[in-house]
Length: 148
Image (tube, rainbow, N blue to C red):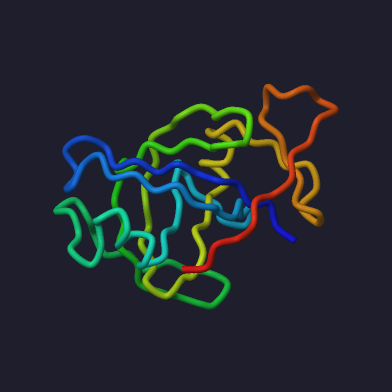
């Protein structure tokens, strides 16, 4: 089991087409280490946001190393406003960068973005988590996954 949360992804103004919104489950991947708040989008998820295959001018090619070896992705800095949407509330909104990986089938959240979203992982084996400002004895269940 993994920790999976529901995210709201909104394109920032100035990005074509700005205002596009996608609500979707995403995997919190503690092995996805990033220096900035970043998430990895499968090509199909990026297509729903209108940023793939026709990429914004700010997109740049990047080669990254993952568990399957090296792969080529598209990097776009500070393109999305992201927040966690729980049944009873929303978490804080933060600005995030994106890696578009056409071969991925799940949205992955980096360690830096998970921290910025105020997430505390309680048990990754059963998939429980909470917001940083939830009561310490509380826990939330993971969302069902979505495969693109």
